[in-house]
Image (cartoon, rainbow, N blue to C red):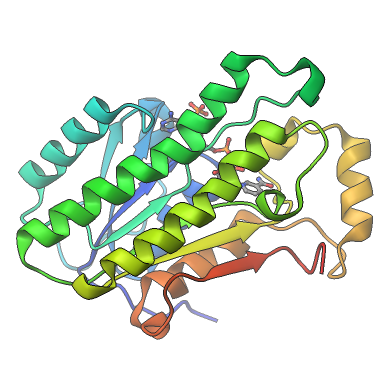
Length: 255
Ligand code: NAP
């Protein structure tokens, strides 16, 4: 069945768009008519995603930028470049950039804790704040901010105390932003993936993946497109009465 076209002429920013879930989100938003700004640490990866996007019907081009979302000066200069290239700020912002540095708590270094928190939690904070400020300053109320959390932020996971803390933080950040930004018509929601087949989960030992796959009621790991489907819904007016929500996309894991 063809995807609907709910995001025609809308500008969307997607971080982590060079890989995995972020790339699938960029593809889905472009199919639905959005102009997509792909942001990734790795410019080559962002450019590779750019090549896979559907042509934009409104004539507004897609773009790719290298940005470290954990650095405020990078995010500020990204916003300036976007404002220079497009007349209005993004109305859709999806933070999918994320990293893992897994280690058991007793052996976890301060560096591994800080770097995971900086990318996974400070990154969404900087993007949410920068995009919301730009929308408010433009006087064009309305927008949809979507942050990718994780089911692990709710239930914890062996070897992932840094990652779980960052993802629990993403939910708190997003719910608070939803309360503050509702008066500007900006909705903020979190998507909580379960185990999704991407380069990130490629690092997980096969026996661990098999164990989790066996626990998933729907009987399989997720695909990046399963997350992109939900992000497209949250980006669109089909979810116009949803804000501050956390939507689990896990195939039923940990029900
Ligand atoms: P992925 O394939 O590794 O993609 C993550 C992307 O983020 C990569 O392109 C990475 O670039 C980029 N990135 C990392 N640090 C960055 C930074 N400082 N600034 C900008 N971009 C940065 O992982 P994924 O599986 O698609 O994960 C996407 C999101 O979903 C993450 O937030 C992850 O925590 C979350 N999630 C994933 C799963 C899963 O099972 N896959 C489950 C729950 C939640 P480099 O490759 O250059 O580092």
